[in-house]
Length: 329
Ligand code: UFG
Image (cartoon, rainbow, N blue to C red; front, side):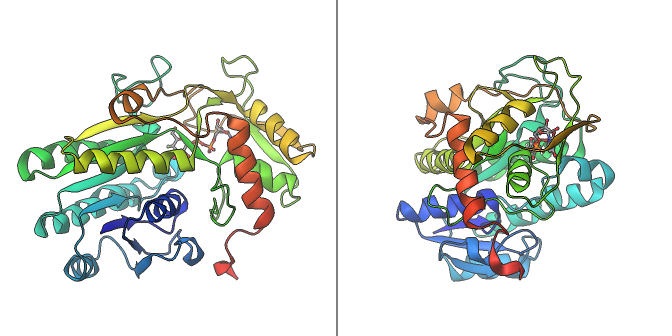
């Protein structure tokens, strides 16, 4: 039995769907702060918080949990700068509470959602696992702290974990029943799509004076189902005795904000109304990852290497569900 924390959220729900497709038995724990009841693909679900050890103990007592896929976290860089307490509490303290119960019940495997933000300002691209980690914000720092905890818990308790450091998670399951639905939405692709659907008057491009060919920021967009695929491979590796490890998840190709706008225009067949605004604090000019390590060691291969295919799946989800999941109404 696999426990998925945050399994009703964006990336967690895509993993739950893929796990179930592979015949895994899945249990979700989600506090519904960002999760949606419609996102669970029918998996048995406990509503509660990872901090609440009464509920996590109950889950471990009632089910034979072999591994935990831990997605439940806050992910907004800007907010983490304004309110670091919220991030260290959610992303570090609550993860410790969860791992404490894992230790109590002798659960020895965890897959952890880490982030490009653990690297900070890139010294070189593509960013591989040898790149120094020097986070620029509390969000990245909170995730890096857990990476450190993972190493210490392996040495002391034999709890083996694999961290996957996501670059820009995007897209949606091609079947169109689950997708990205954040309130408020801050991510580029869904924001552009909302403009294409007439839900926003315009979008703002955060700065066009970066040292990039068109002056706008470059990012590496990885499909959410490719992230789910990487989780399945990481689970398999842990089952085969793989030690605690860390993998970067990107496509080794970068796209500027203006290129993403153009790609959405082509896919949606509408002109996007955008304006150039000031830079957003904390945005690095260029983030590109190489996934060579996970390809070589765990046999990962992206199903969605082309950003246009990724955007097409996002467009499909948003067109079918223009207001996201229905549990808000
Ligand atoms: N952008 C705009 N206008 C918008 C929204 C975004 O121009 O309205 C730009 C951003 O400045 C950035 C790019 O689009 O250059 C992508 O922005 P997102 O907010 O979609 O994603 P980020 O790259 O900021 O953040 C992602 C993850 C974070 C993670 C971070 C690592 O969402 O969780 O990468 O740097 F921490």
